[in-house]
Amino acid sequence: MPGATAVGITFDGGVVFASEKRIAFGNFLVSKSTKKTFPITNKVGATCAGLVADMQILTLQIAALAKIRKMELKRDVPPNTVAKMMSNMMYERRYFPLLTQVIVGGVVDKPIMYTLDPLGSVLPDEYAAVGTGAEMALGVLDPQFKPNMTKDEAVDLAKRAVRAAALRDSASGDGLDILVITKDGTEEYSENIK
Image (cartoon, rainbow, N blue to C red; front, side, top):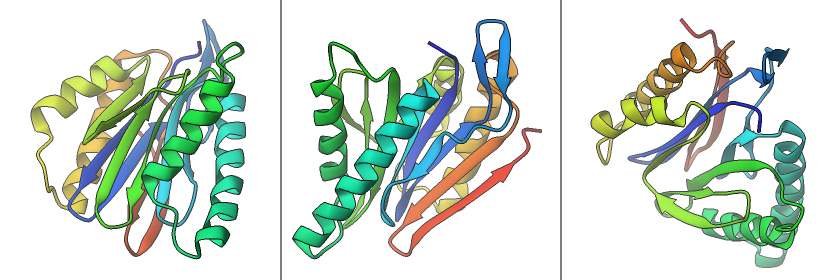
């Protein structure tokens, strides 16, 4: 599986996702500008590590299903519903799996986040990291995460976790994508890894 690093952190009022931009297959650097964070609805987003095509098709299909579900419910689709839809789609393909690990989360009443493996297991968490740089990122997240952080603290911690992984994981690097989701909506931006 190609390398990557993606993290997700809940904070007081929302969730933040961060990922780096490099795609590498073995010793070959394929891309330095790949997006691995995706808004799914205006209150739910995801970040992924693994095969980019699988990430893109999964998020596009789930975003379309979430729009249909929103029209049926006539209200915002909660993050747990999106996570369950992803889980169902990944489990249905278990014999030919989508080779991607996903962190999905958002805000409806309170911030919530889930981690999914390629077979669709859904694990709730307050923070998570996936990809080849996950061990390095968790080395930063584990001692520094605290419940009910502010938005700025969570964004700063997510950046530091991905940067730490990019320094040691040769399959991670070349920039940083950040997606912040609060009750007010989504905010997306990119930065260089310093």
